[in-house]
Amino acid sequence: MCLFLARRLLPDTPDAKPVRLGRLDPVGVVLLGAAVLALLPFVQSQQWPGNRKYLLVPVAAVLLAVFVWWERRCARAGNEPLIDLELFRVRSYWLGSLLILLYFAGFTSIFFVSTLYLQSGLHYSALQAGLTITPFALGSGIAAGIGGRLVDRFGRPSWWSAWRWWRSASPGRRSPCTRCPAGARAGPCSPRCSSRGSAAAW
Image 1 (cartoon, rainbow, N blue to C red):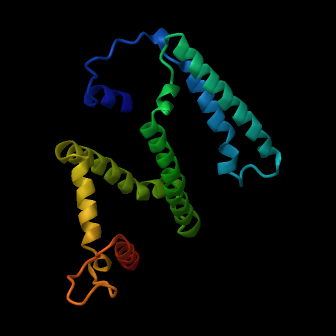
Image 2 (tube, one colour):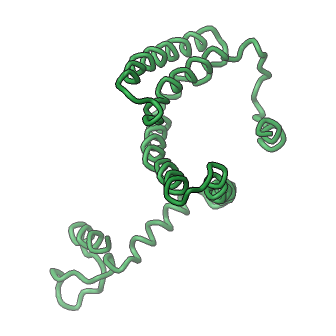
């Protein structure tokens, strides 16, 4: 279903060239999947008691190293690697990837905690717990589509300007400074005062 919808809904790249199946990277998919699978016992620690599961850490590290070597080999051979490692030479790309990693490392724990509460605390079945969290996934998908269109229409600087306006309109940033001369208008009068106002707002 996902592949069908992607073919129908995702736009084509005008300058994209047709890719032959022989140039795809099934080996990279297997290596990356095996490396992630080797870390699965740490997520399901109750089902994997004992310390033997820690032996899978070097296995995962070796698989990831082989995966990186294979991706570079595919790129040199002119094939289509699963992940183009040259992208990490772009500063905005690897900074964005790091931000996404840190964000989802903390954000996805909400679903683990919620699922455990629904099943262990409220005694929901796995199906009921999944259906309870489904509206969040649907809302995220709808909001992502709407947000993408708004960014394309108004541009990123508009959202950045709106955020700066909201910060400047907060009560802490518009409070008068006690160090300012008498009769001075409300609002930060210097970078030092501005930092105090920002701290007061939060």
